[in-house]
Structure formats: structure tokens, C-alpha cells
Image (cartoon, rainbow, N blue to C red; front, side, top):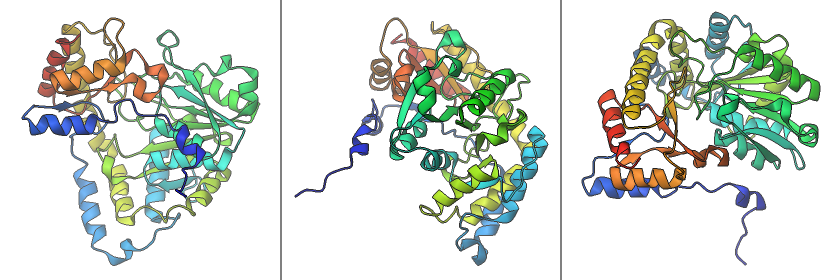
Length: 387
């Protein structure tokens, strides 16, 4: 008898353009100039200080041993110091901070601490797929809440049905938002904390884009809201801010109980991130005030070029205040997958169809600012040919 896959495996949503990598390879093999604006994986370099720290730490045999969930203590201390400098928030580096193997891993595993069969999680739609994936793997059910332009792409948690709220164990929020690039005012976050406190719901705040913000905007931490530590866990990543996507390093922050629960789950599935990478992450944090503004300026230039170029081709593109993305309505009444497929096959441009990030993303496509300005202009001109 053939082994059978678990039922939860079949609950995972299908990716609408799963064949994109193969199509891209075939086009390149035929000599087509492909411009990839799909994944949020910029072509920019990490901080030199992080690279130097990695090389030095990798040469130390002690850094190649298991870090377990404690990790490299100076990394924890650097995270705590950065959170205080950046947000004015004090966190115990050993009880309220946890090294994670990228925020994606930590977000997915946190669901195992709070969610079981019969439970719901409240998930922004469109949104980052680990919210759904972690819920399903934990045996729960994601309740998708559409993010709509008329609400500023803010999840309307205060309009949720009573039976959903009663069954909910986690509310996922992500601002600055992927993929819509929306930002949340502090009073919205205050209401979110109150909502979760009133209903005994864990607030998972995905703050991966806190440092990629423009025009003087400074995204807050959820812990700037009084009492948030009692109900929230916040996730940070080095992937976008420091161009370290492949390094897989981040952290979770929150109250000691929630952080301890996540650490306990992780103890059964991993033995910690390579400590040399933690040393590199520490170096990145310690140079952040000097290095990050220049990196953000590169994204701002790309944002402005891409917005102007797409508008010149007739696309209705808002100017985002944060993130490395543009969230663009599909022209006419077209479907996002069809548009993205035409963009790739006919014009050699990879964009992310909104529906790939949840049904609520239908009618939009996402442009990642992962290419130099001249390539973004060329991509916009090509997209204009199918608009």
C-alpha cells in the first residue's frame, strides 16, 4: 500500500504560478532578457561590517558548535540595545528576545504554541503565506480577512463576527505591509492591543519592514503601545533592511511566557542558527545608524523611478511610504495571474500576481524594487505594452 499524505498537506493553497521558475529558465535559455521583480530579494549588498564579522567568526571553531536556543549571547544583547535605541523599548535579552532562523521560521512555529484543532487565526488577505502555513500545520483554520483600499489596507478586526473572535487564538498584523505597502497609525495599533487583550488573543506583529520607510516616516514597534508585551510577539528580520535574505537570521520579541513557549517548540525542530551568522547580525545592528539610511535611500530612488515610469505607462500607482514594494491595480478587469503570465511570457518581466498572496489580492500585482533604476524603467515600459 502506498503511504498517504496527511490531510493537512492537501489544505495548503496552490501557488498560481508554480511554473514561473521553469518558464523563466526557458526564456533565458532562448536569449530573452528577463527582469525579475517577483521575489522581495534585492540585488544590493549587505553591510561590509556584517561580512567581515561573518568571516572572522566562521574561522573560530567555537562558533561552529550548536548554539541551541540560547544562541550567541552578544547577539541577544545587541538586539536588546537596538530595540531600546530605535523604539525606546526595554527588553530582557535572555527572557524577552529569541534568535530565530529568519522571521518566516519563527512566525510559522509560533502557531504551534497557541493553535490546535478547532481554533482559528485571523489572517490578513493578501498576506505573508507563513500566517496560513503555520496555522494549517498546527491543525487550526485560518480566517482570511480582506485588506481593502477603502480601509487603507488596515485589517478591520473590530468588525469581525463574534463566533470568529471567540475561536480566534492569533491575530496576525504586518505594518508596513507586504504586499500592499500600507502603514498603520499608532492609534490603530493601540486599538489592536486592546482588542487582543479583551478577547485573549495573541497579537503576532510582523515588523520586518520597520526600517525601510521614506519621506521622514518612522514605523513604530507594537511595544510602543502600553501593555502590548502582555499580548503581543513582534518579529524582526535582517533580510530586507540589510539585504541578508539568504543569511536566515532574525529575532522574536515579547513577554517571557510567549518567548519561552516559542523557544520550547523550536528546541524540538532546530538547534539554533549558525553562531557566526549571529555575530554578523550583531555587527549589522551596531552599524545600523550609519549604514541603513544609505540603503533606504537606494530603495527610495527606485520607488520614485518605478512609480513615475509605471504612471507614464498608464498604471494607477500610489506612492508608498514604506517597504520595497509597489501594489499596482491590474489594468481593466483583468485577473492578476493572467496579467503576470503575459508579463513573463510576452515581455520577460516577472511580477507577483496578487492572488498568489491570497484571494484578497486579486486585481493587483506586486512589483519588488529589487533591480536598479534603469531596469525598473525598462520593466515599466514592457509592462505598458500589455496594459
